Every structure is written in structure tokens, then in C-alpha cells.
Amino acid sequence: MDLRDVPRLDAGGCVLRAFRDDDAPLVLAASDDAAITRVTTVPPCADEYRARTWIRLQHARVTDRVGLPFAIADPVTDEALGQIGLWFSGVGEGRARLGYWVPARHRGRGLAGRALRTLCPWAFEVAGLARLELYVEPHNVASQRVAASAGFRWEGLLRAWETIGAERRDMVMYSRLPSDAAPTVWRATPPAAPAAVASPARGR
Ligand SMILES: CC(C)(COP(=O)(O)OP(=O)(O)OC[C@H]1O[C@@H](n2cnc3c(N)ncnc32)[C@H](O)[C@@H]1OP(=O)(O)O)[C@@H](O)C(=O)NCCC(=O)NCCS
Image (cartoon, rainbow, N blue to C red):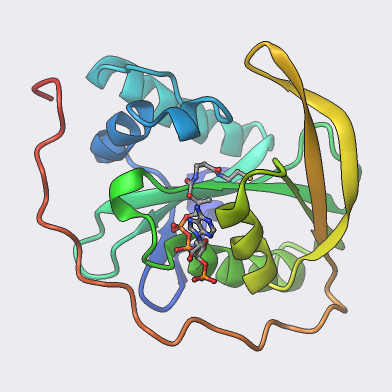
């Protein structure tokens, strides 16, 4: 598998595409966002070099078949606004774990929901997966709403499931199967126009 195998998917108001070297500003924004760095591999307080290294790691994950990370991007400017990925390592055959994040300044525009609702049918119909899984911390209401909007079903609470920071944390497990009904509730309002692009901090 190589980067050419990462499709460009129209998510209606955003697109999903492979990461590019010039997506470093997104990674820098995520790296300043503790809600993202505590649960992802994005390093806190990254500089341009570390941001580009993280992007190259995403490319390696594709070629190593560890996962399929996508940038969630603006359909007009192609600016990367967030991330969503399918992850295969540590998960049984025919299954994938999903993860997503959107830096604070782009949240609340329906980006994660649109991305998830778009990636699921592709994962079933094109990638041939039989089960998609999501692990969400109980306090993370925004992520649980995103999961529900994409037709994921609550399966239960996994106690002390994984270490985040220095603590064992419970996780709520959600899944979606190809046979689950497609979500019928779709956010009707299109995402707002991108906010005036604020210069990222730390003189990047
Ligand atoms: C979770 C996350 C990806 C959501 O991104 P987003 O683009 O803002 O998501 P959407 O706009 O598609 O939807 C967010 C939903 O949560 C709701 N929401 C947001 N913050 C909320 C809060 N504090 N309490 C309750 N609901 C909340 C929104 O109203 C929306 O619900 P709706 O569509 O029913 O109105 C983003 O908050 C994030 O990156 N968080 C940090 C990383 C993370 O937690 N990733 C997920 C790990 S499982």
C-alpha cells in the first residue's frame, strides 16, 4: 500500500485526503491543544520539524499497513482542518479502530461528524471491513455525539481499558457494522466559512 491508495473522499462540506508535507500548520495547531495531544501521537509543543516528522509518520503508517490516516480538508482551499484515521494494529482481521481530532478553532462545524459518516461506508464497501470500533472516554460528550451521528452503537464500558497520561482510564466502546442502518439524522446546516486565519502562535 502506498500514498496513492489513500483516496480523496467528498464528505459534503469537507474532503478526506492523504496528508501532505504542507499540512504542518494543522499539526502545529493540534500540538497546542491538550485535548488532542493527551489522546494521540501528536507531540505537544511541536515545532515545524516535529510537525513534519509526524506527517512522515502518517505516510509510514500507510505503507506499513498500520493504518489509513486522512486529513479532513476544506473542499475549496484544501487547507487541512483535522484528522481521521482507520487503525489496524492490535485489532483482529476485518476490523478497524477509528480515531479523529479537530483543533479547537475548527470545532463545532460538523467536520468530525461529516468525516466519520463518509469514511464508514468507504471502509465497508471499498476496504471490505466487517466491523468498525470507536473507544471514547466517558466524559468526551462531543466525540460520543459524533459517534452517534454516524450510526455507531454503544456496546459498553471497558473499565480501566488503557493508560492515558499516568492513569488507567475507562473507555466507552462503540461499534458499527455494515448491516447497521445508515444514520438518517444528518446535520442540515453546512459548516461555517473558515474563521479568519489567525497566525499560529510561536512564530511558525
Ligand atoms: C471530538 C471532536 C473530534 C469533535 O470535533 P467537531 O468537528 O467539533 O465535531 P462535530 O462538530 O462534528 O460534532 C460535535 C458534536 O458534539 C457536540 N458538542 C461539542 N462539545 C460538546 C460538549 N462540551 N458537550 C456536549 N456536546 C458537545 C456538538 O454540539 C456536536 O453535536 P451535534 O452535531 O449533535 O450538534 C473534537 O472535539 C476533538 O478533536 N476533541 C479532542 C480529541 C478527541 O477527543 N478526539 C476523539 C477521541 S475518541
